[in-house]
Image (cartoon, rainbow, N blue to C red; front, side):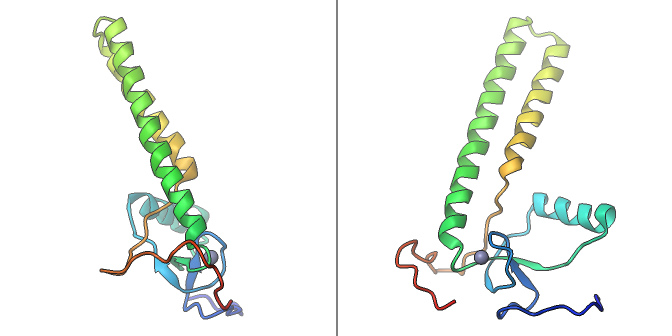
Length: 140
Ligand SMILES: [Zn+2]
């Protein structure tokens, strides 16, 4: 419980948009490993966990969608490149154990690198299509 005078903005009931950072309602971010690690880190290391519900608000959805697809593509290509590189390394080295270790290190490194642009998935309501990217005239 935080006892500081918090300023409620918008209709957010403790939820916060991950794109614009405003307290707004929206599509809930799916809690995955990366989110859990980040939350753990905030709670135990920086001690400033706010425990907001993470969402993507409607106004930011088109932007979010772009980020997300860029991130997914980037992560896939990073990992593919890393795997090819690791395989080449192992082949060139003639299958030395140290080459396997380097290969794994490269894959982990590239994976971590791809997390720099981490964009989590959101929970879309079942049967609902994501809001269209065009015609943005939301009453803010
Ligand atoms: Zn937003």
